[in-house]
Image 1 (cartoon, rainbow, N blue to C red):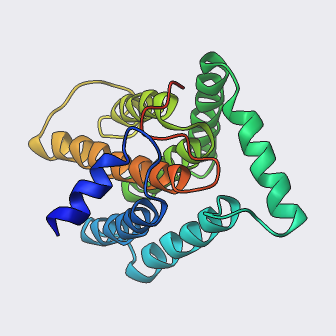
Image 2: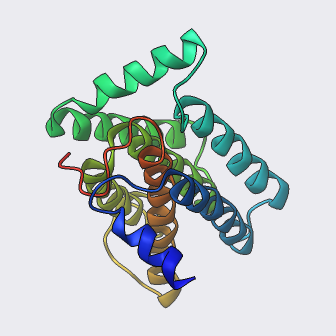
Length: 199
């Protein structure tokens, strides 16, 4: 066990162990789904959602060179998107957040658990496409947005109960797990750049 751990750690500064980190990505997804069910989410929807997300992430970010032309084009597109400047990546995050809030408004207001899931999906997708640095910023921005616009009282930074503080903490925790899972998918793929990404 110690030898295996030492080998895994030794790859962090060079090339991550693809299979180890891909396995971690898969493990985190059901943990997120389980946590969501404990918050009152529908069990089968949560697990079906993470299963679909895992399948899509595996498809668009393969661990080995893709055979099909479509998958090769997707990988090429993700590589180009990753080269965007940080300001463009964060602008994309802001556009997504605005779209989520507009959707929430016209839907008459989602339940807090559902809006958590939507924001977590946005954080996951951003980390999958843009890598670590801008996704950490997006996660923090998503937390502030949920805190201000979604946690009661809405459109206020006031906290009136311990439960409201706990809701923010839970979102931060689940959002970070979603980000980590997506990032593990990314670094275990053929376009992985290691844990010391500069973007």
